[in-house]
Image 1 (cartoon, rainbow, N blue to C red):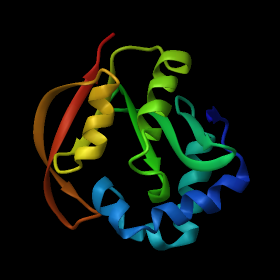
Image 2: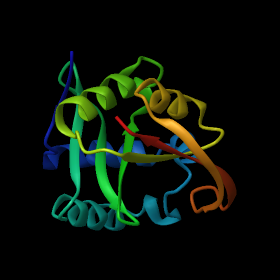
Image 3: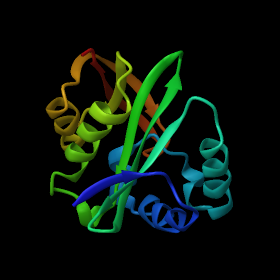
Image 4: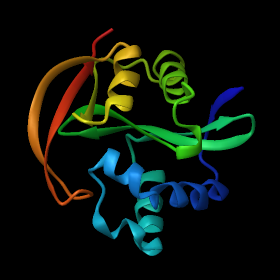
Length: 157
């Protein structure tokens, strides 16, 4: 059973372990290289947990922390982001969590998302939830140390 709830302090060590997964970081691509430094991770989470305009939820599956999702503002546009722990990949959890979030909690439209073009799994999640591709841009991805193609998507309704 999947549920979304407020983030608890006990979730942060789990999130941190997910952020250390090299394959996941490669897929996300836009993380700072300093992600492995716990104090930087903790400072980031302290800031976003108390920031105005950010909505963050922990994704739980059968009472286990599977990841998190959030809505934040970037360039005056509401953006969606999420992170799922590797052990939960390929089970439809990201799709189910995002669909639940955008229908029950975050009804503001349009919503924007961005994904590295070769992150096929995340791209499919967004498309299944109604996001449409609007453009591809070239961006520098700190997590990879190189430029990548980034697909920009919008959820209009």
